[in-house]
Length: 205
Image 1: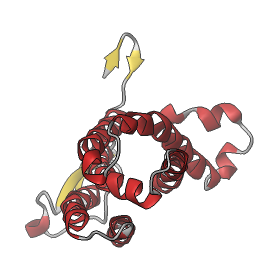
Image 2: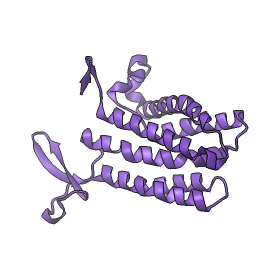
Image 3: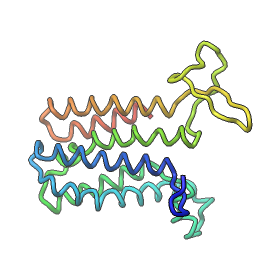
Image 4: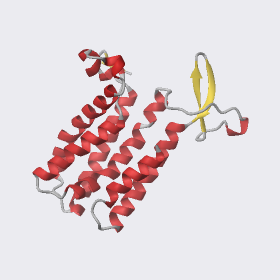
């Protein structure tokens, strides 16, 4: 949709909404970790832009033949091209730096935010459906042509049923939020929640 002549992309709006919700969850849970909740806003101000830069860097790095020294192409994220792996590495890296600066235990800090990250990823995946991308194999069996197993995707002017892989990951991450919060509440060893997030998310991918 368009606001004052500026095209607003649903995918970007979903990603931004997911980030804000993740930040709010971390803010609410910070006291349980013995951390100052007001600092969580600083985490957002530093980590979210860094994560976007990292996501773009990672995408450009693996598509260098297309971007090859064209600075305007590199910074034009409105044309798409963000990789979650770079976003996680850069964003969490900045978070660890801030924890060191504030004399927080970095594992405690990252444990706090990863359930919110999983929820943000779950929300953001619906942008793939809006963009009609990240779907799976064609589904030809009539009995399997139903959501959430499959979803109709236009190929030219014809709509075909495909595996709804965007939904599989969205649902997987949503369940992961619950799993991570249970681990966070039950296991007192710092870093276990973070390790569980990467293992769980990796399996899902």
